[in-house]
Amino acid sequence: MNNNRYPNKRDLRALKWAVFRRICWVVPVAIVGIWFVRQLTRGKFANKLVALLSRLSGRDWDFAYDVYTAFIRNNLLWIMVIAGLVAVIILFLLSTHSILRYFKAISEGIAALSTDGEIQLPLELEFIEAQLLTLRQSVKKKEADAKLAEQRKNDLVVYLAHDIKTPLTSVIGYLSLLEEAPDLPQPQRAKYLGITLKKAQRLEQLVDEFFEITRFNLQTIVLHLEKVDLTFLLQQMADEFTPLLAAEQKSAQVDVPPIVLEGDPDKLARVFQNIMKNAVAYSRPGSAIQLSASLADGQVQVDIVNQGSPIPQTQLDRIFEKFYRLDSARSSQSGGAGLGLAIAKEITEAHGGSIAAQSNGEEIRFTVCLPLYQQEG
Image 1 (tube, helix red, strand yellow):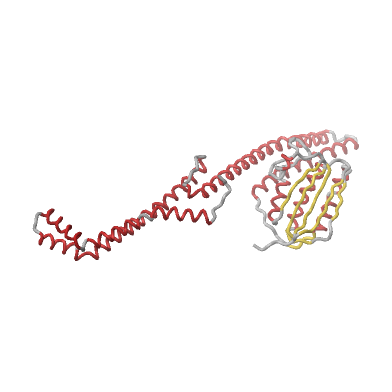
Image 2 (cartoon, rainbow, N blue to C red):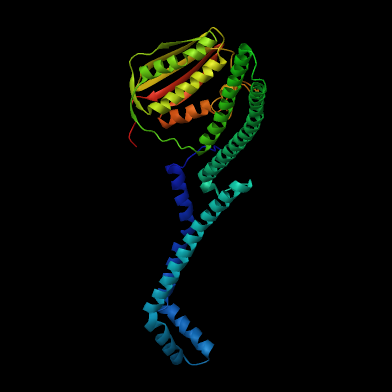
């Protein structure tokens, strides 16, 4: 059975004919009933009925005929009306019974979604059965994904809490030394202050990651659309990363023609910043990160390419999942909360675009496609 099949005209026509077949036998029964009522006043049938009344009552023919005339012949119209009402009621009950039978089967199928029970509907409802099976698979996948994401988040919180203690201990330790030994030589004091500053910055980074986790779970993406100079945005972002790149003998090369699109400038900046952070963290020392853009079919395609260790396809398939980190080492200085690329994906899709990652040997390419103009909903 094809679990992805949706109802078409053939399915609905088959369902209508199935309901019709279940109630169509009422028609010949109604015809027979009308014929029988009509025969109550005609010829031999009427005579036989009078004879039957005579035998049952033990009276003569004239008495039985008077009873027949008073209760049957003179009330033939009412008898036909009552017979018609009975036929209508029977027809209604049969039709509703057939429809309710389908509703009951569908209800049982829906109930089986949450209990993992067997979903088996009548043959006429095969297309609904297929949709319910597809829905069950989708719900199970979402539940598994949510459970996995929650587990990752919990693990990450534990890891971050553990990692916070290390720089915090160092900050307290060095500040205590400076307080207890005010006469330390200036070079040594400067060294301790430098180490304390680095540990405090690392502590700030870890705290920011905690806030990032909270914001991801609570924040709803709301876009404030305006004209965005993509060329200026990408060049400015590359300039902002220059100090970080220079510290590792890396560089950023921007090759973007003049492009103006419609979007939320702050959120689009976050998309490219998150990708750049990933590129900087996982690119080889001394390599260059290339940013380029092109136009095609009313869309702009932005490529951010870096040189680094190849990423297996299994990791590429999950790289945009929340709380997923390429570097699973909890103490990694480069590993964040595993939310950067997930947030980039959500923002991109909120703009009506798409994001993808490829790994061809040592070339890692992130491609962001965005519409030039947002379609009004």
